[in-house]
Length: 254
Image (tube, rainbow, N blue to C red; front, side, top):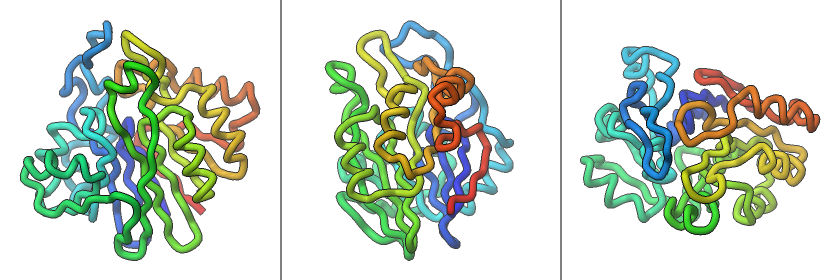
């Protein structure tokens, strides 16, 4: 199994001969514009993809399926709708299927609990995209576990450290976990993605797992950058367990 972070939460996962793309935000720098509920007027995404549009189109031709965890524009944008072939398999939680179908996608598979894609077992997980009023406004989010032979990869999705994440780790015991860092924070409420403190708590609960951190420096609500988080993890002795991924970085998972 191999993973490559494209940008933010967009990750390509190669499992055998199957390529799965997670949460595609494929637009150019600034294409989405400023986010609501924030005083930051910078246009999102803040950074371009780590490869050219020509390379992007070639990479998309290799994608066998796309998993969409939720429909926020940093996980599913207009460029993704335009560039992904309408015959591509789209896997999503059931509440998203009708909206995605309205864009012309012809092969949508709803994942309510678990399913098999080729020889990969997929499990849907839950999370909390913040707490209180902001958490309610952000809505339901999901993650996914990919299980291939004896290897399990848990992509937690846009969630803070919460009982749902703890439950997924306890039940499935993944060797690898991808989390959304950055401590994304809006004008009201607490962070809606993991802070350094959240990641530390996750590491303590999943002490035998390797933690891969994404969702960094690509959208304006994020309050922690790569340097800050790396320094925090170093201070707490967690750099042997955790890695803050760079855009475009590829990793082989064993």
